Length: 322
Image 1 (cartoon, rainbow, N blue to C red):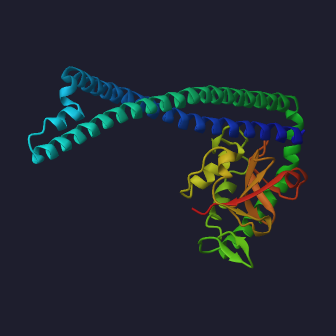
Image 2: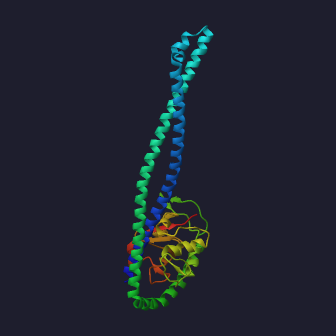
Image 3: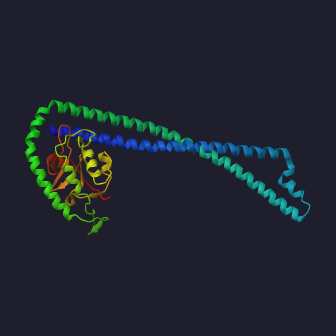
């Protein structure tokens, strides 16, 4: 039963990751669309001006007939100095004509490029909108399933949670004392070092978030919650770190991208631990334990990394360094 609730909640978290990623890509794409629409308008305006200049030049060449042709200009020279001057004039006019034609070709190419980008971007935009809608639908379905399952087994869950309450409070006190002892030894910070060619994460700076998170032991799990009235897993992490001045996003996929990787053997209080394909996250407190908001029907509590589901689905850990 608890396993099923965990799987449903992890599935909803993964769907939320996809939704947030698609949203980010869509915002970037919309910015690119706006920039290219503006650039297309500028290119069209420039092309119109270049075409008008070219048309004026063609009219001038036609109306002056051969008098302004290269041969006519040279044969009309009255002296050597006049010939040199006329040659310079012909070259100057020729360069201007070439420049005008080049502008027309260049602006037409820009228009073609921006139109192609906009066509491609519109197709991609439709795809991203569909992905967001699918992810949002999946979130709704998963949460609805959780709520139905929880409603059907609520009395049994209440009984199990009551049995765990005494053990959890005792474990929390022991873990808090252990975390305080461990975090007191983790002083200083810096860039990653190298020992025998192995990358080592800098010491944890945020062991204090453990004590903050522990204030909320027993707070109920609420999907999308990020306040003391209710937390989901990434909401608890975001809230605890916000209290020490670190801003983290409210979804596990983005939290995984923060900080530096840390091996399980090097975990320190405050490190983030991830499970089930980034479907769940908690805060390591020391002694192989972590604090987290597990799933619908449960409360913020402490669990062991060696527990069956968490051990089987462990993805890795990140240490927040900035």
